[in-house]
Image (cartoon, rainbow, N blue to C red; front, top):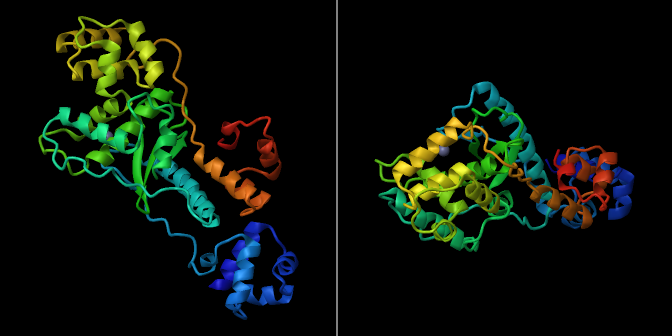
Length: 356
Ligand SMILES: [Zn+2]
């Protein structure tokens, strides 16, 4: 009902009936009647209400909040049901806030996700996956340099990325799902950055490769190959390591890990997949990694986790343009008003503060 929508928008704006009436040039009594569905505003009144409330006029006609269907998980997810439920609750709540924010923005700045055109229809061997990742990089104008911020890159292209503390254990992989058609990827909040990035790239690989792989290829290996190729393209691997090597020095891999946000083990696989090292050398080094406990935790400084920033940026955008008030902005960020004011203090400019 239109009345419920007017009521909801007024509550979101933090205006009283009287205040809204003054802004829109209508009596508070009339607003009360509209909200209680006792009378219906004319289109001129509706327009003025929309302006005063900072919503688009269609807002009033939308039935209600978009219905969230059950999150569809990828088949390969082996997460225990309990963890899944926890993540699901977490993610749905965050998506609802996203949808609510998008309603306040006159033009949604978030693209709908689509794959680049011209991807090969049938992939017959793993090496061809290099082409797919190169096409994605090209379509997204990423060049061949390291991708500085993969979460940002994906969010700009319409993939929603969320972090969850429920993915704490080493055993748990990331999670990909679709919610109302939008691809969603969930990574562990406290994971090292290189693990987050590999998971994000791996899940993007599933999206890009779906329906294209010859049946004798393994989907998981294919997604891993895509991830490695996206994070460190073949041309760069050869440039960094050379065409052919007898062995690789761990320190060398550690330096590259920090340059590209791809783990040392990820580099080892790239070196083998691109025939820079032989299978025998790969196995020798792999065993050395295992023996030193590096399979679980790599040596050297940690690659910092990435932090999503698009949502926060959009909240402040809407706030600056008076599309939402202070209390709505705080609510969307899941903060109290005083916390919001602290975050608003530009001296801090601490994206993570709004994100916790
Ligand atoms: Zn997978």
